[in-house]
Length: 347
Image 1 (cartoon, rainbow, N blue to C red):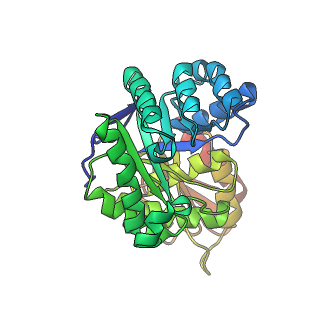
Image 2: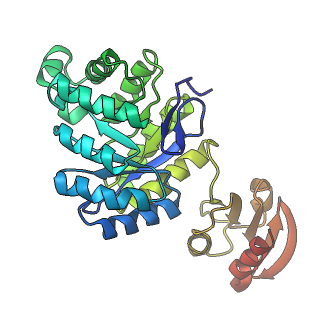
């Protein structure tokens, strides 16, 4: 059961309120270069990214948003620190969401101006707490603990609530997976604002994928989380791919191919490793939900993958092509991938 949260809108995307978990990523281009940034936004959108965040470090980047926002064709969030004028400029440019921390944006008057402009345009604000940048007084009181992350978030939340602004999302990110999990568990019992979940600074494609899968998987399985970003030291398209794989594994979203492939063992009669890799590569651009199986032997293959839409199971020099666990064709090993693709094309 999903935790019940209020809904906010980022452009035409609903976050929270029972809506499907939203996939986010962040460009790694120079926002001051609109053409390059727009190309990457389009690449992320085609990969399945539903909300894209942009760094807005200075006035030139904020000015570039006037070109980027109208052309993006996906909701955009401006990531802003300290300078309230950048938030106002981003709102003027047509940004769909803000990521700021009101407590470090300046005086109450500056925060009031941002809130007024965001409210006028129906733009939500994400309060983004990071374990690596907690205020000294919070650390002195709580140490680096889940309570410290939640207390920091509360401070920012109360600033916005005092201005009668409730169009809020919250994140409590840390590179320490248990710390991050406990912080989200704690805040989910205290507020009904939608939660943006993620393991920050998770690492490379290999190590970061494992940490993110563990952290996000546990929270999502407990019903916590309304939108996710998988943070990887890699091209952001891999973040989008990873997010979808996590959501598909938990049966929370469906998009593209779910590949079922068996581990290698002494019964394996075909080169299941290379065949599975080839199938995965050839099907990576399919967006239609589809379950495909690549099994190494005919003993258990079709039965173990009977829920697959279509699959193959290897024998000595030959293999079966099956659909929903039932064989439909018998072909030589060298033709298995081709036969599988032919069957998929019929679906």
